[in-house]
Amino acid sequence: MNLKNVLEFLNTMFDNNIVKIMLAGIIVLFVIFFFRRIINSFFKRTNFIDEKKEKTIQSMLNSVLRYVATIWFIFYVLNVLFDVRIGSMLAGAGVLGIVIGFGAQSLVKDLFAGIFLLYEKQLQQGDWVKVNGSFEGLVEEIGFRVIKIRQWSGILLTISSGQIQTIENYNIDQMRVIESVTVSFYEDPKKMFAILEDMCVRLNEELGQYLKKDLTGKAIEPFTLFGLGSLNDNYRGYKYTVTGLCEDLAYFKAAKEVRRILAETMFEHEIKMAEQHIEMRGLHPNE
Image (cartoon, rainbow, N blue to C red; front, side, top):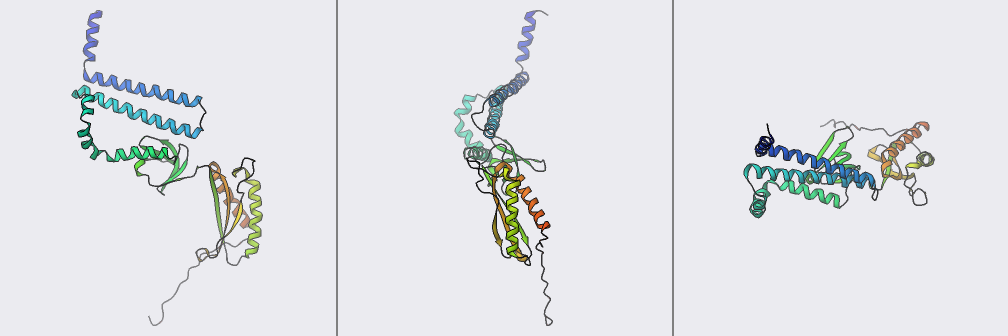
């Protein structure tokens, strides 16, 4: 087989539409891989913004890259198979927009919602959030249209940006630990205040590293006894509350340790905890 025959064979092969589409797909995958490597390398070598913001921007750029490459591939396939020209499609965008608009309303809603979520800095990659008051977890990926949240159980939740109504973000600079305990009505309030104030001294000594500090290194709001949260907590007893302002990333660890020390304190001083009382009323004899 001479060179002329080889060239003719290649020319014939590349004139095949299926081969063209396959080659285009391979090129698209290579371009995505290449640019993702460039993006990852760029953010690894830069530190002009904090790491969480870098990961958020990187996630968004990767998402935009995938969408752009996919849209280009779809246009190319339409051009190869049906000889659809992009120019003519754009010229008829008015009619096409009306047709597609009814079927793509949710897609457009998701895209704009995702843009506004990032623009308003409601969350970043690596934040611990609660979405719509129901789904709680770590933001693992922020896409151009969807957000992926890794729940505590390990389940990966993918939610469209347009479905997000409320976001509770646990990683916005600071978090306040608020832990309460309800004790029996028979426990002397004066005794309880003294015990809990001493416990707060212990909290500040053992958990001081979790507290948020000012520029001088002093705790902005150390662990303190907030006081009586309720005189009759659900008809069970007196409710006492302890608070402390912590670094956002240390919130869960600090809250868990505060509960541990609070439980140890109640046990060591033999404090009677509140009990649930159920009042049963019998029917009147004449009823």
